[in-house]
Length: 69
Image 1 (cartoon, rainbow, N blue to C red):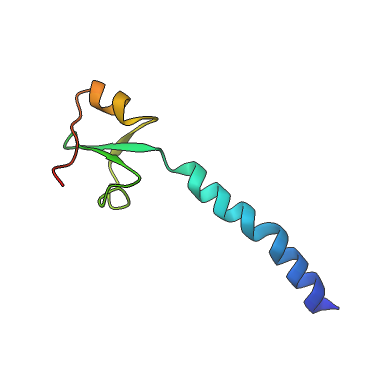
Image 2: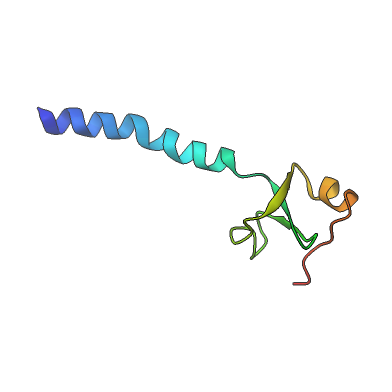
């Protein structure tokens, strides 16, 4: 019986945990070097000091540039 309760609890809370992780990350990060990284950029996850933006266009308009590669 405990096993069933555990499995049901796990099924209820695991999907919301993953959904919240995605929501906390911005769509675009502008690094301190003014490089705009979207989620497809190789450096997106490594960029820790950044200004968040909704779109690449907003980031570029603020003085940022695209990565070289």
